[in-house]
Each structure stands twice: as C-alpha cells, then as structure tokens.
View: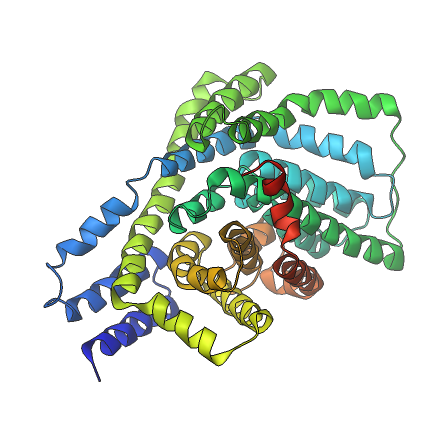
Length: 434
C-alpha cells in the first residue's frame, strides 16, 4: 500500500474518530490534517505548511464581508427588527387557516435574509412566535419545527455568509453577486413549500384563523418595517448594479443597521461594546473553521483526492441524473455531522469538478450544496438550528423530531426540484447578466 493511500486513510479515519469523540469540528479538521501531513513529511517542507495554508486560506478580501455581515446581523437582532417584521407578516397572512404559522415562516425568511444568519432568525423569531402560537392552540413542538426549517431560508436569500464562503471555495468560478441573485428564487420556493405543508396541517387539524387586517393596518406595519426591508435592496441592489463589492456592501450594512437601530431607540451607544464583543467571538469561530478547512482542502488537492473521486463517479455512473443524486445523498449525510462552513470548504473542491464536467453551472451547484447543508442543520446529531430552535421553544429535541420529519421531507423535495431544474437558480443571474 502506497504512502499516498495510507495518508488518505489516516486523514479520514482520524477525522471521523475525533468527531465521534465529540472533539470540536475545527480541531478535528486541524488534528487529522496534521497527522496526515506527518506521513508526508518527506514530500513536504515541514509542518510549517499547515500554518502557511491556514493563514493564506483567510488572506482574501472577499472574506472581510463575513465579520461585517455578522456584526450587522447582531445589531439587527438586538435592534427591534424582529418585532417589526413579525407584525408586518402577521398583518398579511394571519387571517388564513394556520395564519400564525405562516407569520413564523415569513418573519423567519425576512429576518434571516436581513441578518444573513439562520441562528439569529431561529432565536429572534422563535423566542417571540412560539409563545404567541401556543396561546392560539399550536403545539410548541410544531411551532419549533416551523421555526427551525424556515430559518434556513435566510442562508439562501442574500446577503448570506455561507454563499461568500462558497465563492471562495469555488476558486472564483462563481461570483458572490451571481450567487446572491441565484439564491432568491430557491429560498422563496423553500419558504412557500413549507407554507404549503402548513396549509395542509392547518386544514386537517382545524387551526384557528386570525382576523383579517384592514389595509390601513397593513400599511402601518409596512411603514414600520420599510427601512428594515430597504437594507436588502441597498445591499443586494448595490452589488448587482456594480456600485460596490460584497465586502463594501457588508460595511454599508453595518452602518445602515447601526443608524437604524439608534433611530428606533431599541439600542443605545452603551450597547455597542457588548455587540462588538459577541460579533468578534462569532467571527473568530468562523475564521478558525475556515483556516483549518482550507488546510485540509489543500491537502485533498495535494493528494489528488478530487481527481480520484471525479474519475470514480464518472466511470461508475454514466447517467448524470444518478451522479447528481449520489452527490446529494453524500452531502445530506455530511450535513448531519459537519458544520456548514468546513463542509463547503472541504467538499466544494471535491464535487465541483464532477458537476462542472457534467454541465452543471458552478453557481447552480453552490445553491444545491448550501440547501443540502441547510437540511443538515435541522437534523441530529449535530444540527445547530435544531438545538437552538428546541432550546428557544423550551422543548426537548426528541419532542421536535417527529413533527419535524415532514418538514425535512419537504426540504428534500425542494432540493431535488432545484437540482434538476437549473432555471430556478440560474434565471435571475442570466437576467442580470451575472
């Protein structure tokens, strides 16, 4: 057995063993990469290679957008934005059967898109909506399931940090602007699909309707939410129009969010040190994940793993529909035990050459990849959103799993639709010539 094969076995075996031992993902990636490199010490300059690859991995202007968007999201999370969006959404759909569940979905879509964070949407919307829904007869575990799955739409609808990470991992073959625009329709489709299942449940269980809001009330809540919604237009519109880059847009988002929150009076200047500290901690976690993931990704390339997997898939399966299905299954499994950021950085270089060889656009694959991993965020054993949503709703994970299963099946169905109908992702980028 060659040293290359042994190195690959050590890499994967040590990584999965460390994960099973509940070692944090970033450390698992770094340790397994180091062990594999030790076997290649004769072919490499030394262990300094790891440090070099970790530092060069985050030496990217595009990645500056992440700390800014994290900060903007934290400001908006504390700045009373959630209540304004919930009231606006409620005025639109609360009169329908199961109306409050629709409100949950719409508010999560809007807040997730504005903040760029599924965790922020889950905690902010879930903490408000779960109690309101319980008062009108909705089981808490059902409310949690709605909140958990709908919060992931903000990872597809821009601005989205994970799409920026994918743009980096794709080696520039997919631009941030194209990915941002491509995420709109899939994200909206996912939200509407979740609403479709809610409509079925609401009719069969006889969930109560709310009162129809008069146009004057809808207009009132729209005016209150208008400037929050305007952030999406400014940030994404500016990127698409070429007025500024994604990184510059993230800085503008911070300034806009800060001014808006201060005008609303929900936070004061005294709150900013704590907001900055929280954002810095979140950014540090993300950046460390990126560092170690980029080192492992480089090792994959050094060992020729992407080429091996690409050749294997293309030789074993002649039908691209089957290959896309296999890749989706692998990514769904990966998403259940790995965080999104390292999964995107590690597996994009592996699968992107395969799908491109079969005619899939890198932008389209980015949306498919992110949606796959969104499903993983909602599933045990590592699903971050699952645990956050359950905690916010004050219900156990075991209570949420059963009502969550139909929602996960809906998400998988949407994934297959988006995979095999590329126009859903590619129509808007083509319209704007991105």
